[in-house]
Length: 499
Ligand code: GDG
Image 1 (cartoon, rainbow, N blue to C red):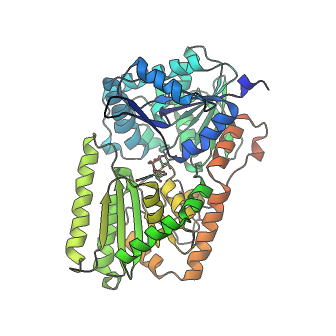
Image 2: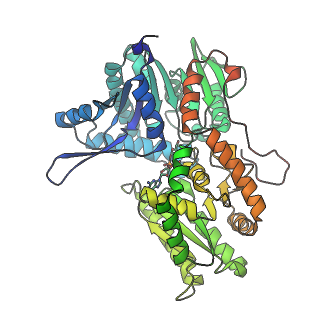
Image 3: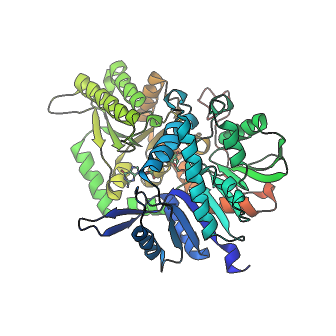
């Protein structure tokens, strides 16, 4: 195959680098650190290709475009920026993406602000992205678009005459039909999505929801066959729809968590909070993460089971995010009040503090130390596409004695549901009971569960995910498609089932 035919064009809202102006006005550039970046940059280097995205600054300038070119040069791939004005950032990113799609796709309809101009600017910005992609790509390239900000890009590319094949991965959940129907632009959006050649979703449940919506709304939509990746027809178009769960760079987390520096920080933490089990909550500031409900569960734990006082502490890390949106500011206040209430009710002056509240970003070493030090991870989103924190916690639990308490509404529950303690995050007393169960669990059971989860995450890591997505786009025999074992629990066990 000619080199040009193998090129990969990655398109995401943000570029995998952070650009900012230094004190003297010069550009400072730092590479992003997420799993997506770690997994995709080597593929781009190997195949050659381009990453297209917004540099994160509401600024349109030649100087910035030149800086982008320079950063990509010599790395084996190119960077292309889509420059957005402040108005576009407001209506496309903060508006349509984060005040409509984000809450709607997480089943939180009451938080949606269906402001009509948001849709128009969303369409215009998607066309802007598509134009840059069209200029940067050739017919033989594979264009891989990421996430809910860019759902119209394949349709716009077709209008622009592009012949390149396209794939889309949705990092957040796809909602059930009753919720999706509330979107005023539901048909336009679905029809645009169906212009991709492959649509990848996190879990079988998301795939089922998507297929059900398309069946109900799109004329002549049919699905052939069964399995993790299915072929669908929408009129004369043929495409694939699959569930391909994202993961982490397991070996990197495990290796870094094993260093002496992390071990030292863990000891410091245990010395600061001695003679108790440490429970970790770690989330971006977001109403989907269920932080207030989790704090209420903690209050219930100490109120209903006084014997648990002084024997556990919750370290709740909240990483600042989207502070420009009013709901997020209100949420921060609510979290602080709830943490204050628990500490006010149960604290032992000069001794035990029930909730350690941290509101800031952590360095990588701090993050790993919290993961490694935690005896229990309490991950209770109201809904989550996957939740990488759950997988990272397991990867860093090198002693293999920790317990993962996980919301059954996190995508990760589809893979880890048999060995995590699954909870319903809305069930305050149920979550409190799960913490007590985790606290009392015998070492042998903890180890067996943690080992199985770690083995699974090691096998299906982020490199598997990239490979599986690209294979789903090209493989002829879909029945042989690689897939993780479905680890969701069977009905009738009395345990919560991952839906
Ligand atoms: C979306 C979907 C899906 C967090 N705080 C710090 C920090 N982090 C890193 C974690 C983890 C990532 O951020 C958060 O990932 P999540 O998956 O938990 O959540 P979202 O940001 O909402 O991501 C989600 C994901 O996309 C991937 O498809 O799983 O469902 O919502 O990697 O480690 N890293 C550092 N300091 C921090 O303070 N260094």
